[in-house]
Length: 320
Image (cartoon, rainbow, N blue to C red; front, side, top):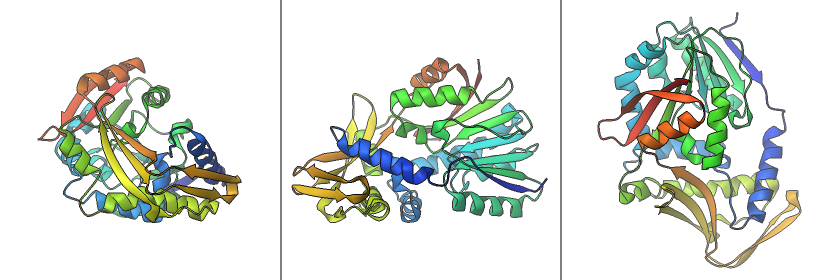
């Protein structure tokens, strides 16, 4: 068996078709919305990497702290021989876990980006030649067929990315993860925690404007891929805390009344002055809420770890 295999489960034009469908549905919705996954072209990914180093943005550092200090406990609790990471990206944080899993046979990174998967796999194999890497080019939110790999399996969904899903979407996602788990398998889930509003808003509206550029990058993506004529300078970045739902919303606010044309969709969209378009939610969690959502999906929370300042949590759960 080759140490690196790459399987594409997405049709070649799946990304383009999904972008067209999402933009059409979102811009015709009231209020207008765009899904956050379209931030992440090469420029958007570079901007997000920069965000993770900003003093205001604590989640990446907090999660890395937990992985560094608790990886051995996670390894002991799971004994995983296969690690499946959903939305793996560069796999940078996961290396703490991979290093701790002494019996790990196969790593299955799942991402929509072939270049991210290939780069991460090459780095991992260079440092751990005995590790088999079976990368999947796939959209894990649309169901997932996994390769046959040794058990027990550990499915990891890190970074607090689950917070980008609306409650109904989270429920469907966790239920789909449950179908991947057999007795002895586990889910490692990263969740950002509820905390002071000022800390949360600053994390999504940094003083240097990197997050604003990241937010506006979705407009650059639509311009390039769909021939649209969005003027990013005609929009401002907004981050607000929704106390009722306990999530941050990122929005783009139109600074002027304007009409945007999107030729690929044969669509012209009017924006009123100060009209806001939601581009992301980032839900924040409490332990009891995470436990309840996992239980509703047929999962039992068995371990709960936070960083020293209780800003972020990793939870381990098993099939009930």
